[in-house]
Image 1 (tube, rainbow, N blue to C red):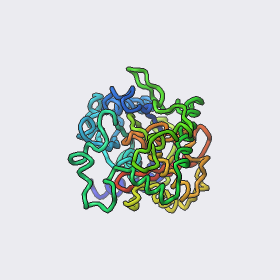
Image 2 (image 1 turned 120 degrees about the horizontal axis):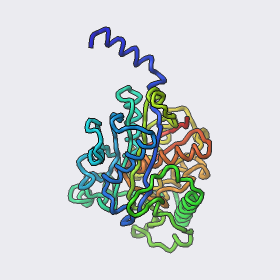
Image 3 (image 1 turned 90 degrees about the horizontal axis):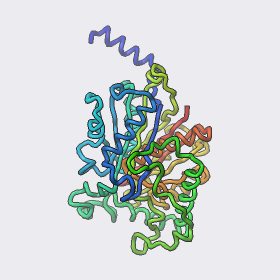
Length: 394
């Protein structure tokens, strides 16, 4: 490029300003399947291909218009190995020149995929990108990508009792530190199920879910009537622990996709900008407690924007374990009535590599349903990481 051409290009980038802002124009997810349930017959590439096709179809967009796809996936081995995002794209027979990347930030992988795509758009590197995520925990077991399995990590190389990604110990240490009782955890777990049941009964998830063919799957399989008394009868997962299968996230299958464009490109295509990111955070936290990441990430996101919890209309905090969300509520002093209002991973499920995008998708649709303005999404992640996003509805 000549010096004159370079100068004109630079001026266009500087003048673009608002036009190059990254905005969400569509966001969809599969229903979440239980381990060994209806989605277990779908390979990860098929689950991901389904939501990629759906998000483009809803926008009326051709695959060749997409410039990059960034997907989250945690257990990148076997059917989820060798860049599952690229494999899903190619398996669909779409334009081979579209670039694809798969990232791993443990449970925050798909949230970070959204951060990356939004940043690529805002930087002017691309105008159209899809952030997505997938995990088939029925077909690819968690920890199977660790050397010789998870037990290989149990060495003196790490200053905590559990290896990265094995989180029950961290959840129990947080519960002990904060003084939570078994009753506290069971009550929160029952609330998640109650809210998720109500959300489905009222059709709150209908717009964000793209049903699958085959066995007709249109609803999250893990949602079922549950009470505190029912949960009280479950055995703890860890010896002398407090968390049970009813107060921990479910092992699940699912996928999600979010379509990002620049404001300029959205206008050219006649697409309505629906939301933008005000802040994005990936942070570390104390490895001993392992799951304090959402607290640290929330603090950093609020500091970056100059906002407080009072400025947020809706919170989505991943329910990896009941103690994680209770701790986040206690430390941030956020309102439970604005947190996980449609239930969370305890009731809905947690397909690891997809959940970060699922939370952003659910937050967007709930803001639109309630005419809310701002949502904060936060997650704990294996390896003592945390993620946070502040989403503004447009």
